[in-house]
Structure formats: C-alpha cells, structure tokens
Image 1 (cartoon, rainbow, N blue to C red):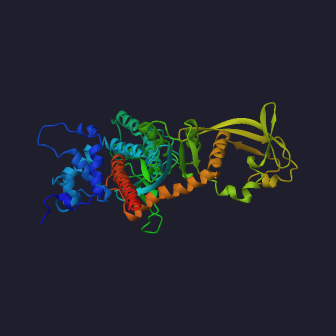
Image 2: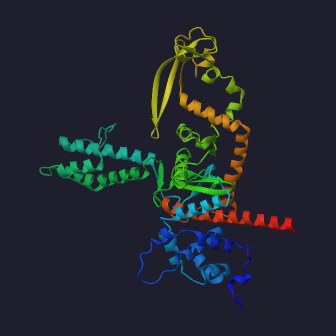
Image 3: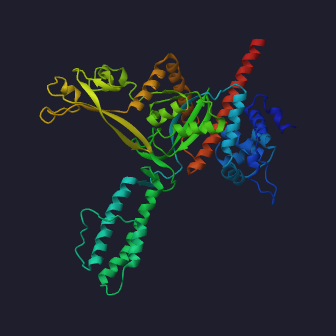
Length: 509
C-alpha cells in the first residue's frame, strides 16, 4: 500500500524537506575526517546528520526511538533513503563522530541565517537556566564536609606521628589544633622513613593504621578537593555536575540537584550561541560566551542585554574595553527607585564633591570634608578590585552621626570618624550601564530580552519537556544541547519562512 515514491505524501513545506536542504549545503569535511576508511562501508555521515537534526527538531532524543522511526515513519524513511542503521550506530555517530565538529556545524547554520537576513550578529540577549544532569541525585560530595573530615584526620595523624617520634603512647585524644601541614605524598614518605625496629606491638599497629587506613583516606579527600577545584560540590556519578538549587522542586523542600548552568545568546528568536558551565552563578559565564562570538564571527558585536545576574565589574569592564554597549540591569536597580536610596546621607552618591590641588574630596551632609586617605586592593575570582578610601578628620559634635555611621553606638563610637571605600572604576561602569537601560532603547531591550530568552526556556522546559540531560560530563552535555539548539533554529526558520510565503500568497490572491 506504499506509494511509488515516498515523498508523494510529504508536503512541499514540510520541515523534513528544509532539514534535507540545509544539511545538503553544510560543509561536513571535519566530520568526514573522523572516518579512517577500510572495513565495512559506513552509513553516509550526511544522511545520519539529517536524521539526527530532524529527530531533535521533533524532540526525539533516544537512539532506540530514532532507529524505530527509521523503519516506521515515512518522513524518516524518506530522509534516510530507506537506510536503517541500528541504535548503536546512531549512538556511536552522535557521541563520537560529532564530538569535535558540532560547534562548526552550528556556526555554519547561524551564518546561513545571517546571509538570509534573519540575524545580524550585532546584538545579543543573554540569559541562563539550570538543567539537571543525568547523574544520581544523592551521590553528592560537599566541600565543607570534605574539609572538616580532612582536618579531623590530620589531627589523628598528627597525634600518632608525635607518639611515634617521642616513643610514648599517650592517650588517644588528638590535640585541639592541628600543626600538621602535610599532604598524602609527604605522609607516605614519612611512613616509609620510619624505622620499624625496636617498636612495640602497639606502635606497629599505629604505623599499620597510618599506612592502610589514614593514608588512603587522606588521598581520597585530596582527590575530592582536586575534582571540585573552585566549586563547593560535585556528583560522584558526573564529576563535572555541580549541586544547584532548581526551580523544579519535586520534593518541595529546597533540595539541591546535580545540574549544569546552560547559557544561550539569542537574536531575533534564534539561538546564536550555547554555553554549558558548572558554575552556579552567571557572573563567570558572560565573557566565555562573548569570546565564543569573537572566535566564531569576529569582533562585530555592538550590544549586549542581560539581567542583573551578569552585573560585575569584570564583565562591564570587558564590554567597555571591547566597545560593546552594555544593557545589563544593575543589582540595585529596584532599590535606586526608592526614597531611602536617594536620602541615605551615609553614601557617597548623595554627597557633594569638590577639588583641592587636583584631588577630589567629598562633602558630607554636615558640610565636613572627606579627604582621600589611601588606595586599597582586593582580589576575588582572579580579578583585582581597587578601592579609594576617603575619611573625615573629625566627626565630633556632628548631629547626623547616628545616620551616617553604620550600626552607630553612642558609647562605643563617640570618637569614631566617617570612613568610606569607593571602587571608582566599578561605580563609573555601573552608571554607564544604568544610563543605557534607563533610556527608551534600554527599556525596549529589557522587554525584548525577557520575551526572547525566557520564551526559549519556557518552550524547552514546559512545552517540550526537556528538563534533564541524557548524558554525563560537560562535553557530552554541551554536544546534546547544541544538537537541540540546531533543531530549534531550523524549526524557527521553517516557521518564519512559510509564514512569509503564506502572507505573500494571501496578498497576491
């Protein structure tokens, strides 16, 4: 009962035809280079690519389901030319062959959209969401617990070593504070150097305990901390997944789950970039996304719009140095609208300024001068912040002292003078970004940002039920998400394309 041609029952505007046409135009030479040749003839990579893209466009992620559709669904049968690779072949192609070239394929599709005039690559709306890893939810390792148990172990080791060194078997109580700064390697060398002759049975038992119990445990704690790096937690079944607080709380108890922080950069409803991070916050994800843009397309980006989660001195300084207009909402955006903010006399921004011998000073509410005292610096997350410290020489007798000093105590702070630290570079960057978002263009951009980025996440999680990754490790998760992003972009292109055609046909009619 099948038609003589499979495509007789496939409409001319079906998404499968668009997928077929797009993949035919892609340069897949990086993909072909992963095949060594010889052995049994492989399925043609371009055909497998078409099948995968179309499957992800239709929210089909299981290799077994895709293999079954290749035998049952006329769309998949037409796309594959009636080829029927099994699920192992599809999985091997997705997990191994696409590993090194998925970004190249995604970039080609974005550039195709640029040539068609759908996106310009000059502006981006950036946002992130947390998506659950395929890891077990209860195989967690916490930094605080590891550090606590490691310190306890070091105290026990110190006690045993001090007993052995002195030849005295004191009581089993460890000293209150550990004076041992030793790692597993140094402990192993110390154990090997201990002379076992003329040792009592109890001392030999202690040495054996050091070697067989405490040393492996110390090595385990060190390995945990090395795996965590700068994170506070990780999952034993997916070492790169971090435990994060999710909006989807099925137990209604604020449970943390192993997850990844997924970032997208959007323009005109198309995903231009995808980035997967193990960081719980968004502060450290903005620059990597913009660097990806520079690497893939050159430094042609003009505007970036994001929410307050991306507002940091490092990020805003990067945008300024690269001449990118910042439309990033400040963390105190809502607070700035209140009367308390504008009437707080303790803050520098509500004080007058003056200049004396080319040096700026501040004038407080009582008319006293706060002169520059010194410059301080502070390093955080590999970035150095610089603070200028200003202070009043004498605040005695000031009737506004209780409002000006933080947590003022009349008895303790009677002789205390006003001192304030100002990160002048950070404040200048914030004011520039705040001025941008307060403009008419900035207000429109904030509205567009919430529609475009949150719209994608709403579709992904609610409409398409893509809430949890099927793979483990950051590389595989990134590859899976980029396949999903390719499917979304093709689907958006299909909608835009045929909506225009239908409108045009309606006008001509």
